[in-house]
Image 1 (tube, chains in turn cyan, purple):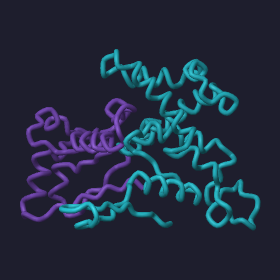
Image 2 (cartoon, one colour):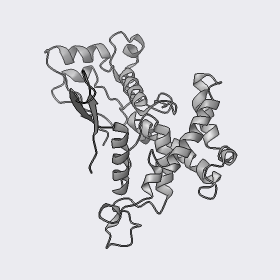
Image 3 (cartoon, one colour):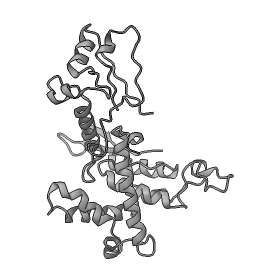
Image 4 (tube, rainbow over the protein chains, first blue to last red):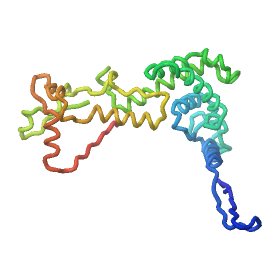
Length: 180
Length: 101
């Protein structure tokens, strides 16, 4: 991957001859190239500042049978050897931070987060869960018309929030052996 | 889970073997960390670390815990002060390993 640098010229006494120059790299552009390249290889770079967005997009990605990760059992054409050595998998990009699925999800979740600000801190997580797991939330904004149904989005939200809590429980060394 | 050896067993020549029912659950559904969907992963992970530290740290001044350590047969179990005392009496470094499998 080639990342072009940005050249900045500095002029001191005259406008015809620069006193020095500096080559810098645009990080936003670099990041975009990194995201595009990794998606083509069947990987996703995640923005961990917004864990719920990323997990929600992951859940949808897992349900997308067209997005085939490396060594996916759904890869039927062995000649291409999957996204890594084949013609790349364009489906991954739409779930990345720059893809349309992620951006629309971000819009929906940010709207939900704004709407719970009127509640006290201790009730916000429960309220957010209620909003995201309700199909009417997605019907109202109608962001994925003809693409992903509201019921599927609500079910994905339910599943993603369940996994989210479950993983933190495992990280907390909870003992299910004794509970059961 | 936590297992503590009995005070009487400390003076036996053979190391104590933990019985199957001798473990105590210290993290369950009631005190497990609930992450916030409004926070970043970094913030939630730091919260998890603090939460685990608060639960698993041995506190010399924990009066309630000091009197709560008895096994099912009524044998006195080693308490926090004793664990800290035995663990630090040689001024050796203590290494603790957690294996969640």
